[in-house]
Image (cartoon, rainbow, N blue to C red; front, side, top):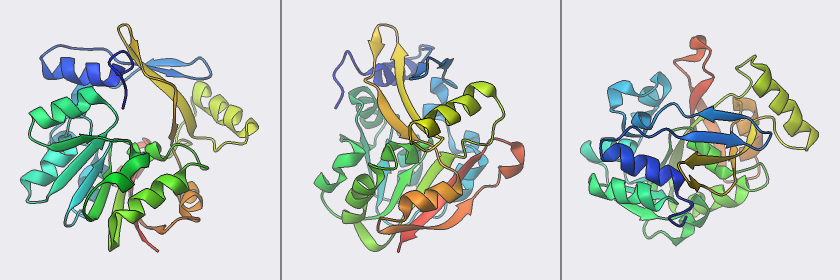
Length: 245
């Protein structure tokens, strides 16, 4: 769990929940700095989700684990539709807001999913949170933990973005920078900043469908189907329906 000084994301979520308009900064390890798409996305209603997230969420079955639950937008949507949902997040601020909004949210890293009680039928990793597997090297351990707390016929609904669906030099040059370091092109090392707070640097992985198959290969999971209704809009976003092999 992050401490108060490190929980920049949680402060953004809390302040938006309180009616403020926080500005979240994303910093990448090559020096690139950008502004996030806005805290409102963390609270977005179903009608305002991306097309691929809307198309994928109906595949959720049974008891659900919402990994990187944030402000609870996905968990609350599924809870309202009769699912038992547990959300986990490393951000104390996000967990606080999710609980305040009615979600069973717990302060836990995705890497520690084995500590959860009971069995889940669906794991949701929305908001591009397949990225929480970290790197190609750390993914098998994290995905193994998710396999350990899920049923035999469980699925992961994993949202991510094909990092190569761009021609912006700032990003294509970063892909090359990563490859020179022996990393996948979409392997981000980032931190978020808000006011005087800054998270520790962390790894966050964006992958093409072919790379997702590569990342999943040494695990108990395999890519069953790609859900990408927005494929023609150039965003690169998609949901992977991942099943146990």
